[in-house]
Image 1 (cartoon, one colour):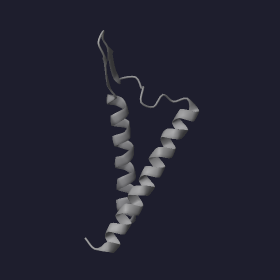
Image 2: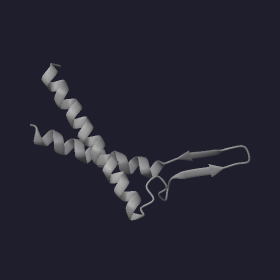
Image 3: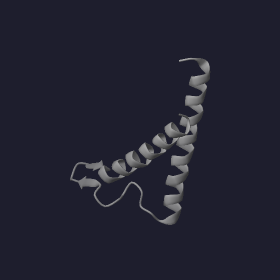
Length: 76
């Protein structure tokens, strides 16, 4: 990988992080409970709690897959 490709990769990685972060911020402002969606597992016991965001993870995965595929098609 040459320097130019590495620079492009870092720039687009940063842009993706900005878009995802902005989306999460807007979801919070709009009242969408991102990170506490129906289907996320949350178990509380006497000595602790367990939280696994199943649906949130799936949603983030789908969104990032769409974004990466659009970027890949744009640069081919």
